Image 1 (cartoon, rainbow, N blue to C red):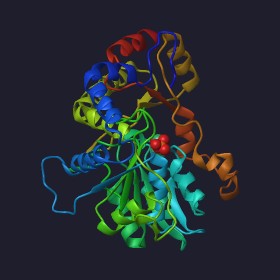
Image 2: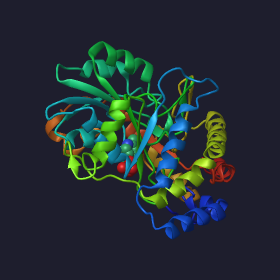
Image 3: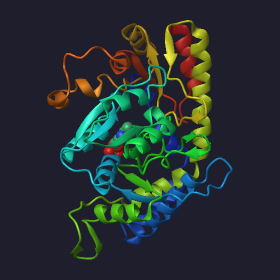
Length: 379
Ligand SMILES: *Cc1c(COP(=O)(O)O)cnc(C)c1O
């Protein structure tokens, strides 16, 4: 993460640790003293709590099957295991958004599949269902919807398309654990959904970690088996899997943070509201990512589109405001995908977003009032 002169962190993880220090240290000590370091009761308890969190939607008890949670070693592993569980085969095509972190496209390619890139909506920056339709071929098997920057992808439309063409959906909620769309929580929209506990994600641990969510009992069993060397019964391997496990230490840390998570989300949303208010009155040509009606974001970052990004970044640098570019290049222009994309294609919305996007700090331990004062003076 970017740490500038005044030592303000893009994600203030030291401020968060200070706030929960006693609880964290007690939890960490208990694991270290227990002698149980991988899996075990902390991991089992976390999995129950993650599932309960996702199933507890805005007041109504869903009649639908409940989501189960299976932890693993990272968000990228979670995506890989999800695709294996859904039976992705070499040559199968999967539609992914053009404007996102590389992981979803990378995992498809890693398993021999072919990622097909759908353009994004220019305002919400989410995958555009019309562009998804245009990418469907006889080889298409599924769609990966990414909850970009903490806002759920348009899953109602994606589900309609998926049902019509008999495709599965994977929800990549690596940035969006805790987001809502309608009355439902993120991690409940895919046939399989995943999240990441990378330290700077909205719910982060102190290393790598991830989780896989599904309400399908058979898929849940398959996922657990694949994450454990393809084995249900010790030393009996039904299929070739992988080793992807969460440490007990990370689970204990996540349980402490999950306890405070709703309160953190409230502060994140209040911080974002302050930025919204500032940018709507600032007059500069800087427009925040639009949050679609019915959605609440986790604000993994607070991302704006700046007409003249270089000038805006020069001002951020001069004012000592940490910032990041998510993402400087759409996936269809990445060198690693050159053999499956058309280098000469016309500029699309993902290109424009890559040229204009800048992310600002927004976590619950960021002093957004201080940043906005600096912005007001700088812009
Ligand atoms: C971070 C991220 C991932 C990968 O998660 P890791 O835990 O870092 O492997 C996948 N997809 C998206 C959209 C992400 O932001």
